[in-house]
Amino acid sequence: MVKEFISQLPPNKLTPFKKHPYQVREDAAMDELVESVRTYGILSPLLARPKGDGYELVSGHRRRLAAQKLGLPTVPVLVREMTDDEAVILMVDSNLQRENLLPSEKAFAYKMKLEAMKRQAGRPKKNQSQVATKYDTASVIGHESGESRDTVFRYIRLTNLVPPLLQMVDDGRIAFSPAVEVSYLTRDEQTELWDLIGREDATPSLSQSLRMKRLSREAKLTPEVLYAILTEEKPNQKEQIRIKTESLRKYFPRNYSAQQMEREIIKLLEARYRAKDRGER
Image (cartoon, rainbow, N blue to C red; front, top):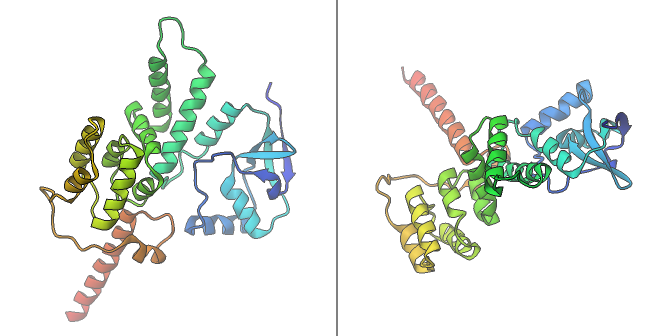
């Protein structure tokens, strides 16, 4: 029987979940949450489990921050005893349906849940391999998340990227499919690639990433070869206006991807064009 109770606890008594894969961003959505809590209070209790002398937060990290910003002395918390794996699965599931999740957030969330479910399943049954168990578990995760088993594994591959490249995926500078293939490169090769991207202001296409992956497996992906692949002209390459993301970041919410910023800029230009057109009539 699950032991649980609801209590009013100080926010600082709730420690964040270890290796929490979701970012608690101070953006427009957080501002809205703060105003909602200010007006209505916290309508849904946070979820935590006893841990040492305090409590480990399983779900409700954004609500906790909102409460801290408002200086609330206590927040309602559902305290429940649970194992590490039960806590991981609940923590992942309580956030997976959020809008605007970054690729890195989904990647580490899927990985944590897959590992927790595999531990819960224990040893494979007779005549069932560990690989089969792993694929069955990924199928369950994908079904619960509305994605295929293969997509789950492709997201998990992103956890093999070095942090600067993973950040570029989150920023929308490297597309998902090329990023998955780049994740098969060694860490030294990835670091070299990241340095080249910065120097040449170019990112790999899917076909280029696939060639890099193949050459890496053949131990032929030297810095010179990486440079030659990355700087070659792409067949469908068109003239582009390049603006560094960092130059635009201050004008948009922190969680906006490059694609979202581009869409907003296009909307503003279209509105300006329509206003100018009306003025000339």
